[in-house]
Image (cartoon, rainbow, N blue to C red; front, side):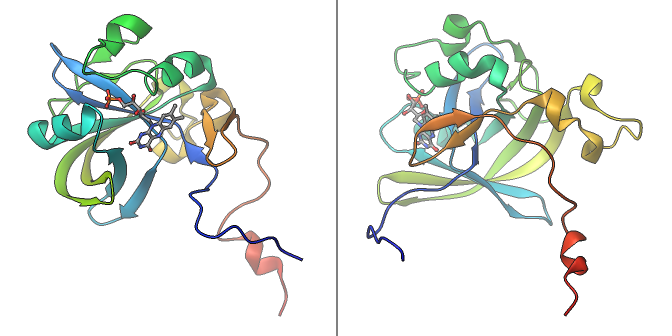
Length: 192
Ligand SMILES: Cc1cc2nc3c(=O)[nH]c(=O)nc-3n(C[C@H](O)[C@H](O)[C@H](O)COP(=O)(O)O)c2cc1C
């Protein structure tokens, strides 16, 4: 048996992302859980940013942003960035999170986030009350200390990273559990 609810915005898990737009002198952080990779060539992602806050207009003006993946260790700071607006709050100053220059785009990255994606705004449209921004990922930063022997981005130590997971609809923060299998392989064990 199933219970139906009609159209609901429930989706999980979501990465708790801190999106930064601006410059090293003046930048804002917004907490965004609605983020998704869109294409692989070129690497592109999409973020949904409400039309009422500060960040939507700022991204349109700046034409770039960075996506910084939060950890459980900065949960309180990450939540704060989703409770206050850049319209009247300097969220870098209030949280103590550290700006670092990006390599290609103007918008800084956040030092305390182990994974940082520099994005150039390539497209956007409004659906309902939300801006949908498409960003081409032009550079990727990862904490060197979290990389394995190969130093490849795919060798990143997920347990040490401890990403902050947002459970949309249920409204909980959680951390990841243990590894359960190897994608693109385990399915082959089903003999049919
Ligand atoms: C866990 C969490 C996830 C959020 N995800 C989104 C999101 O995906 N899109 C969005 O527009 N706002 C999201 N918000 C709300 C914004 O972060 C919030 O409205 C923020 O104050 C806007 O800041 P700004 O005015 O500086 O842009 C989220 C908030 C929290 C706490």
